[in-house]
Amino acid sequence: MSPQPNNVYHELQNRAEALVAAFERDYVEPAPVAVAGSALAAMIDHTILKPEATPADVAALCQEARMHGFASVCVNAVHVAQCARLLAGTTPAICSVVGFPLGATLTEAKAYEADLAIAEGATEIDMVISVGMLKGGEYALVHDDIAAVADVCHEAGAILKVIIEAALLSDVEKAVACELIVQAGADFAKTSTGFSTGGATVRDVALMRAAVGPQLGVKAAGGIRTYDTAVLMVAAGATRIGASSSIKIVQGAPA
Image (cartoon, rainbow, N blue to C red; front, side, top):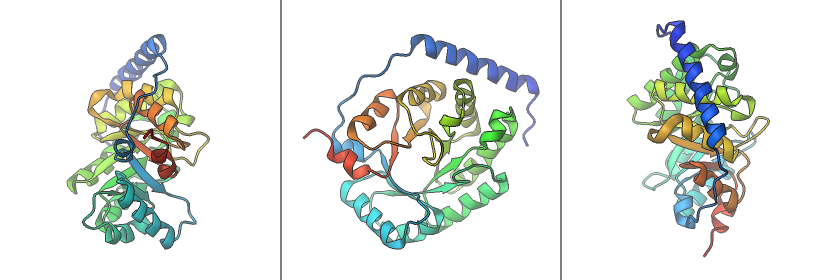
């Protein structure tokens, strides 16, 4: 674990509290933005993470991703090699998940899981933070957990998105998590697994955007099923959308 004095994390907590206070004072619900269907498709991780997903389901996912121009397919690691074969030479990236959906695995296991998924063909990784450790104030552990996976990803040229499971966190905890994501060198902060008590909200996306600043991506995921919801997430600051209803979303775009 990297040596970080307690006062560093006390200062982090203070910054998070100040950020949330300013956010609550200034927050205005964003107005919808008009996004063309093709442009929105290029922001969507077309997702199938349900445990009963079959190879046939994954093949259909890949075909849909090619047809609609989605940013990536997001699958469990067991399906990565199949996606790599089916999407070879095409635009969509291949995203897999690590420590999913609970985040409560050892850092070494997460790093190894990421390494294996990348070896199978993944070019993007969505990892889950150690939610309980964050809530318990173990910020150094959370930082190092993210950094270990970020190192594996970046050594291989892969992108790391970090899921904070926002529905389980207070606003201050969300802000702390986002700053740790920035400090640990990840590429995106992501709202949710879609397997917990709630998914993405417009307010959470806006808070996360305020917390990470302009330099990182923000991925909204969980419960996004319509075009109108998706573009509100974009208006709030999302640069990537995770969805299993991707086709319905882009078909809802104005002609």
